[in-house]
Length: 140
Image (cartoon, rainbow, N blue to C red; front, side):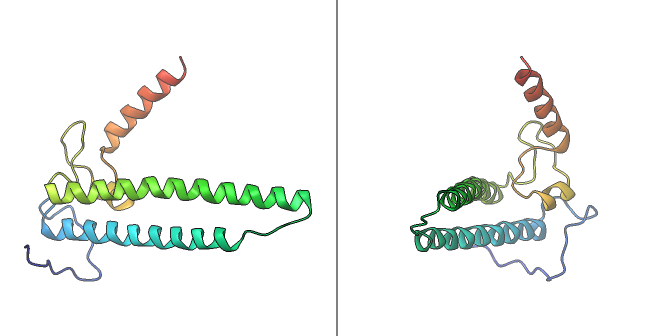
């Protein structure tokens, strides 16, 4: 069992410290766990809302509007479910010592990018290449 890493509340990873040191890993672990908890809480409230929100609405337009809202809510929750899966993958990479490194190049991903998108697996350059290739193949 690893000893708990002290992390001040105002800690932010800095470029002048060793990349993916214990403090940075703990910072990203906590960030990911917080995000996961928030998503799961929102999901729970959505399910409860959908169960409670079943009503018989006589007006066809109102019923259609409510069904559209429900479909949109379910689509949002599906995207969040996929994000929870990505969070689990990021947490696994932290445990395996692979977090913060680009899957394509093996180079470190910038701390700013990781802070903005902690589930990312590609550096900015690799992501741009990936998107360019995707666009070229989509246009075929």
